[in-house]
Length: 323
Ligand SMILES: NC(=O)c1ccc[n+]([C@@H]2O[C@H](COP(=O)([O-])OP(=O)(O)OC[C@H]3O[C@@H](n4cnc5c(N)ncnc54)[C@H](OP(=O)(O)O)[C@@H]3O)[C@@H](O)[C@H]2O)c1
Image 1 (cartoon, rainbow, N blue to C red):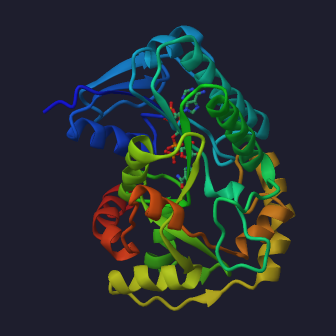
Image 2 (cartoon, rainbow, N blue to C red):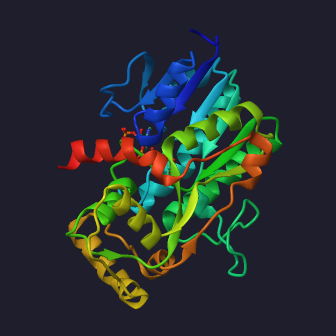
């Protein structure tokens, strides 16, 4: 089957990118993927690889030239890089993709930012696209800066739309998903965090990316969220699903806040960032970071499934991977 359409995907070798590429291939798209020389491309079949990186114009231009859709997913978080690299990859890397698109015959850019650039002002329970927040940390500030570049691109003749996934859950993720599952499944992880978050299945985010390409308004932003769950609810539902009932105790908010500076010091010593990163981020972990996807639902027909519908496949993957 072929749609005759071509997609260029940055971040194709990442967690979300792999799922997106698989879906695009199933739907009959021709898929071009950006891959660093060191990227793991195992299991990604039927993709035309453009080997280089976000700082390599000679790779970016042929990648996007003639593509109907440019899904710009490549990015780094504080989990895997220092703040300078995070700024450079997320902001400057986005600028490079947009410049390549301007220089070439490129179709619509779908930029993947994060829901983290939005937050309620405290009075509302859920945040929407209009709740632009003061960024906390290099990840949020780099994504906010990249969003501005994308908005400007759309205002000045380019075609672009921005999506804001919340915390993505699913097979193939090596950060959030295994942490959350471990909290629900492992008797050795008997504590949960106060606060809560919006958990969205990776297949729902892929649906949202495709819907934003198809029907998103130029220059518009769409939150792609899932269920809003307190950590203890999420963890209890995972434990229920697994038919386990490990005893757990809550970690008091004060303990998590106090852990901030310690984690930052450990990060400096080990070269590895440890959650929570600093006082402000630690405070975030104790809040309810809830979101509404109503705009995406109304304008794009976006829907998300409950946590349980994503659990069987994700748990099977987790058990295979981590046991
Ligand atoms: N996961 C979530 O919960 C979540 C939530 C909201 C938003 N997002 C956003 O969604 C996007 C995808 O996230 P993910 O979870 O799939 O991340 P991921 O698994 O860490 O994948 C990141 C991808 O970016 C690529 N990349 C990093 N630096 C690059 C560079 N300099 N040049 C070219 N490619 C580079 C990586 O290549 P390698 O394979 O070589 O490392 C990888 O393909 C990111 O922009 C992220 O900020 C994620």
